[in-house]
Image 1 (cartoon, rainbow, N blue to C red):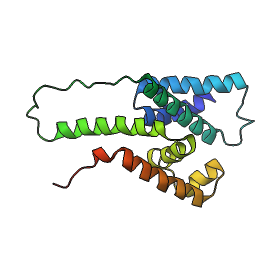
Image 2: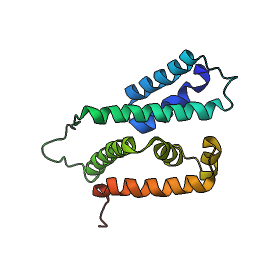
Image 3: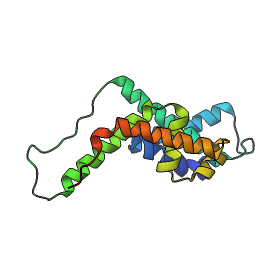
Length: 163
């Protein structure tokens, strides 16, 4: 099962944590939990869905633990902007936005965070998410809508003005 699904678990965790070391830790955690439980592929109805959800939850736990640490990660930025044109500020903004999104996701309750990640980071449709989680498509749509509103409030400082 590890060989078949390690890549899936790692990619899912990496999309949330944005860090290969954390994603590898999440992968290890997910598969160790399975081993301790004695859960086998035959017991799980849909092992891919189960592992993806386990990776999302474990990655969110990592993000939450970072927040409880209350440390601030500083970026090494040059004192004066380089003459490389507009790419550098966009890159810095993208990195900062990604970190802010990770922090905001970590503050969500588990179900909304899971639905958001499946929808926008994993690319699943609402009907697919509903089947994976065993809930109605309407509930998925409601969760997506409310979560987007909450994240919009959290990330309002990152909205770009039209030039």
